[in-house]
Each structure stands twice: as structure tokens, then as C-alpha cells.
Image 1: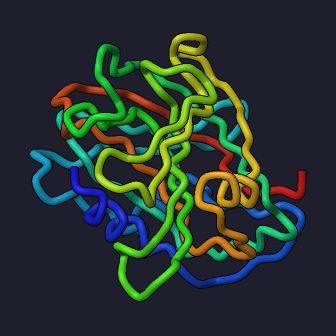
Image 2 (image 1 turned 60 degrees about the horizontal axis):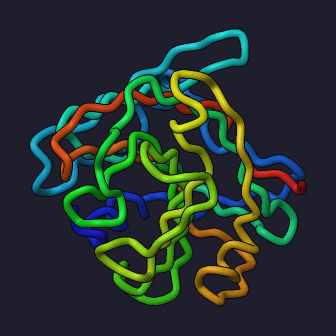
Length: 216
């Protein structure tokens, strides 16, 4: 899947400011899901199927990608000087074992959250950190996207250690943009979720919950 197309999908997530110590991004309700724009990536055979549910820890989003790719997002601007830490709770029920995620043919993730910074007038000029739940690489592994060095895939969770169980992770987005892109970023311009399997033609099942930004 071409990186440019993915960024075009993800950047309907712009505007609306919040400067609290905790900034919730998604509610994962039926009403919210019906109001979010879900776009299939050009060239993908199918859309990822997104649905909502709940458990003792609140609402969650379920993503089933069967040879499919589509993303969704919400308009939000994050003040990274006040709330630089992204918090994600997620789970992979069916992983994508055996693919080479840093190649074009295998560049799929059962669960990923994009953090995007606009650095120019076109999507090609944007920079991104792609926080992923990997099916094959260890936590901490990072690599430029095989489509563009302006997007970095960064493994926060791996099914090698955490398959079919909820896990909560966090990352300092402000520090990561400095580390991977050498950018001093004060505000984040976009955040989006995507589960995709259009390159590998496989099927994945993933869950997302409690995605928010915090001071620490």
C-alpha cells in the first residue's frame, strides 16, 4: 500500500484543540463510529471491518482485516508540550505471523496508531511515527517505512510476548519525533487507527481501547 495514500486517509484528523493534562482521543461508541469517515485504501480488495464493544475497562474498537485496508481518525490537535505521552491499550487475537513488515510485500500490521506532523503543503511532506503491534518483530524495533523514510514504524508491542491478551503501552511522541525525524514538535496534527493486510493478503483481528495523551 502506498504511503501517500495512507497519509491522505489519515489526515482528515486535523484541528480542534485541547490542553488538559489528559486528552482522550476516541470514545469507541456506535455514535462516534457512525460519524467517523472510513476510507478504503486504493488498490485494497476490501475495507477493514470496524465495530465497537465494551468490557469491564470500557469501550473498545474491534478491527477485522481480511485482505483489507482502511483507516479511521478523529479531528484533534495535541499540545505535546503539555501532554506528550500517548497511551494505548490493545490486543491482537489473530496475528500476521511470518511476514516481513519492513518490506513492501509485508508492510501490514494487525494494529497501528499513526501520529502525524504536517511539515509542508502536501501529504508527501508530512512526517509520521507509526506505533505498531508487531506480529514478527521485538518491542523497540524500528524501521523506516519501505515506501518512505518520512514514516517510521516503531514496535510498542509484539505478539511474541503478548498474543490474545490486553496490554497497555505508552510512548513519548515529542521525544520520538526528535529521535526519529530530528524535529522539535510542539503540536501533533493528526492521529489515526489502521489495521491493514492488503499487502500480505492475510487476515488479522485486533482490538483498541483507551487511547489518550497524558503529561506522564
